[in-house]
Structures are given as C-alpha cells and as structure tokens.
Image (cartoon, rainbow over the protein chains, first blue to last red):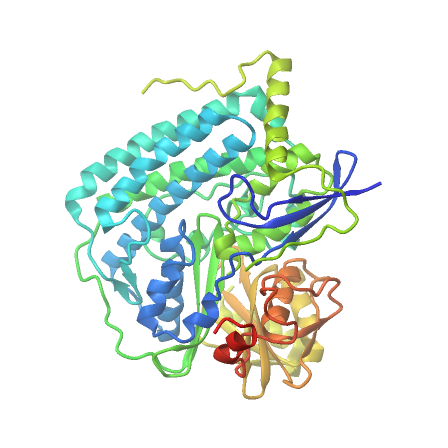
Amino acid sequence: MSTVIPIGPFHPLQDEPANFLLTVEGEKVVDIEANMGYIHKGHELLGQSKTYDQVVIQTERICGICSVTHTVCFCHAVENLLGIEIPKRTAYIRTILGELERCHSHLLWAGLAGHFIGYNTVFMWAWKYREPVLDILEALTGNRRTSSILKPGGVRRDLDEKHFPKLLEIMSTLRGQTKMLLEAVIDDPVIHSRTKNVGVLTYEDAVDWCVVGPTARASGVDTDVRRDEPYGAYDEVDWEVIVWKDGDVFAKVAVRLLEIIESTKIVEQCVKQFPKGPILNTIKQIPVGEGIGRYEAPRGEDIHYVRSNGTNMPERWKVRAPSNVNVPSFHASCIGESISDVTITLASCDPCYSCTERMAVVVDPGSGKIIYTGNDLVRMGQEKTKAIARELGRPPDLPLKLEF
Amino acid sequence: MTAKEMTFYLSETFSEKVRFETASDKRLYVRVQPKDLREVIQYVYKEKKGRLSTATGIEVREGIEVMYHFSFNGFPLVATIRVTTPKHMPELDSVQDILKGAYWIEREIHDFLGVVFKGHPKLKRLFKARSIPEDVYPLRKDFDLEKFRESIGEA
C-alpha cells in the first residue's frame, strides 16, 4: 500500500515555500511530485513595462542570495544584444563581487545541510564564517546584499581600493576555515554513512535532466560557464573547475566546499591584478534585436534572454535561474531513497525557489493519509544521524577543532 | 565548436529544413518548421551533446514563438532553435521524452502562453497562481491586468 506524504509548502528550514508530495511504500519513496508557484512574483511580465535601467534594479530583487548573479546576467544579455565590450576594470569588479557571492552562498548552504542531518555545530560555524564575507561586501559596495552597483555597460560606482587589504585578510582566513570544515567532513564516519550513496544523481540522469552547476559537477558533468564562455576576469586568473564523479550528497558537499577555496584564490588574484581605467561604457540607445546572457551563479548556469523592439523597454525578458533545472532532477535522485534521507537530498541541490518561480496552492493529497509533517521529517533525519553516531561510538555532533 | 561549424553540421544534416539567422560567433539562431522540431532537437541533444538551457515563449504577430536555447559544455555557443505556432491553435510536439530537461519548461510555457505540448504526460499548472483561470494566459498580448484584477475582485 502506498501513502502520500506532503512536505511543505512551508519547509521548516528553507525559508522559502515549496510543496513536495512523496508517495511512499513502507520507508521507500516511489514517486515524487512538486507543486511550485507559492512565490511567483511575475517578474518577467513586470520587466516588460520597465525601462532597461529600471529592470537592472528589479533583477537584483529576484533573489536575495544571488543579487549579483541575475544583474550581471541581465547586463550580459543587453551587452550581447548591443555587441559591446565592457571596460577591464569593470570586468574585475564584477568578478570580485561574483566570487564573494559564491563564497557566502555556499557557506549558507553548508550550514543548512549540516542542520538537516543534525550537526548543528556545522550550522553555527558555517554561518559564522559567512558573516565577514557579507561585512566586506558592505564595505566595498555599501550594502550586504542588493547593492545596486551594476548596470549594462559597466558599473555605477567604483570599488574603494582602501578596503582591499581587509578583503585579502578575510579571504585567507576563510580559506583556512573552509579547509578545516572540509577535513572535518571528510574524516567523519557519521557524515560518510549519512551522505555517501544517498540521493545519487547518475551522470546519465544529470545529462538527461540538463542540470547545471555544483549539482552537475558532483555527478561528473564537466560544465562551468566561467570556463566555457569566459566573462569578467576568469580567463586572466588561475583556477580549477571542481568535478566529482559520485553524484551523491557527499560529493555535492565536497564540490561546494572546494569551490569556496577556488573562489578565494580568484578574488586574491583579481585584487593583485586590479587594473586602472574607466568603469562604464555609456549606452545611448538599445536597437532592435535579441541577446542571450549567461553567468555561472553559485547554483549553476543562469541564462537571461532579452528581445528589444527599439523602445526603452524590453519586448520580452526571460529569466531562467539554475534551480529551475536543478529542482526537477529530484524526480531522478529521490526515488528509491528512504524518507529520512529525502530532506537532505532535497536540500542537496541548494534549491532557491525565489529564483525558480516567480503564488499559493494547497494540494489535497487525496486518499493519502498524512502521517508526518515537515518538522517530523527533519527530526527523523537528525535522529538517524544520532543513531548512526551511537552505533559508531562517536559524539552526536561534528567535533570541530577550534585551532586558528 | 563555433556558430559557423554548427551551421555547417546542421545544413549538412537537414539542408532545407533549417533556416539560419546567425547573430554572432557565439550565438546562433535557427528557424525550423514545427513538424521538423523533434528531429532537430534530437540531433542537437544526442549528436552534438547540447544541453537544453531553457525555452522562451513569446507572442509575435505571426503566432506564438518558442525558442529552445541549447548550451554546450566546453565551448561558448548558445544555439537557439526557433519555431512558430499559430495563435488560434498553439500546438507543438513535446520533446520531454527525448530529454527530461524539457519537462518543467514545457509546463511553464503552457501556464503562461497556452501552448499545448502534444505528448507531455502531465501538462498541468506549475507556476501560475490558482486565482488565474486555466484559459487566461498572462504573457499573451491581450492579457489586461486591470480587467483581470477587477474580475477576481482585487481592483
């Protein structure tokens, strides 16, 4: 007999709403269905009645975490439409801001993932490491997030170079902290048994569902827009694309943590090579045409499509955030898992619903009996970790060394 | 692979079935007829290892235009396959059985523009709010926001 278990729409930890219906037989998940649209804001339609300069400000408000991502991506689309290049200094500014965003986004996710499996120390520490990154963003741009510093053709304001020594210091500290977190994760047998071979997304499934970013790279798909179509300063600095083959939750954790280390290296090199020069190519008019912009967001490839009809407002503006293609891959990765592993699997692709959709549905699960709430599921996930820890004779939380 | 090479491969394989509208060496726009759509997408996905980034729907004078944007891992090319379907009966063949990546985006375009994807197993509401009736499509040009708000009593 199968039972339907609804998760959400108000997922206790992810601060954004989404409803998943799990059909289970015993402990095993046999089918999953997503009901989205709780926070659909109608951005695409709204943007078609705003001028290009207003759309830039609007794009920043698509997502609280990826405010730089969507703005730069929209700028890329407009610049592609016009066929113009941006000044070198601007390219470096965009790269620094983009990588700082990646650091803070991955740390935020690492903290949440730790909480999902019941390791609250990871949650506390990762979010503590994230704080200086937001502080330096505030010093550089004037705001922790949503800084309104970008515009098509360049940037609105220059970065103040007097903050660079502090930025370098934060990056080197963050690298040490991330390495410590990574070692602790790799060494811990409880995390191994909780995340290894859990929620596996195979290479074939990853290609079939067209997933992007760390979700794809953890399944062995070698994709990264920063390398495939270099923008900003990525072709002038040394860095590596992190690819793991396993496709399980553990690989996704490792890929993200290793990417933070790469990001810190990119920022350091950008600061060292920071060029002088103008920061804006003024755009006078947007001709008739169409453009596609791509950007490697913390969660993967972001793509914007803009069509202009020669007026000061876009005819059509399409936004496709990375979560929009990563979330459906649950159809492949959750089937066959046990219920207590589903929360961490659902969390493993770092879903960001604000980006993915852009209102409310209460779905009647039909004849299915509701036996668990979302809170129960998280509790089950955490209890499973504790049980494994007891079996292995380990402390119930991740023992972090407090050394530096 | 550049847009030029891709143009060559596509014209070799499909000759008159595809019409090229190249924009630059990193972006390629190709127009196909609705009946050839599945064939071309199968080729780009299976043979050329394209990844369906997304699809965009837009209402134009001639009908409803759907664009499938393919990205490629390893080189900077976005190939866009463009297809137009008449406004009075917008229908296209679903490609979600060729590549699962089209599963959500076809539902999304159905939500907002009312294009029917023949062969899609679950063409039901995904993102559109329940307060918007099934036959009202917000991204169509004839969608009147003020009138709509009056009809649901929000004005």
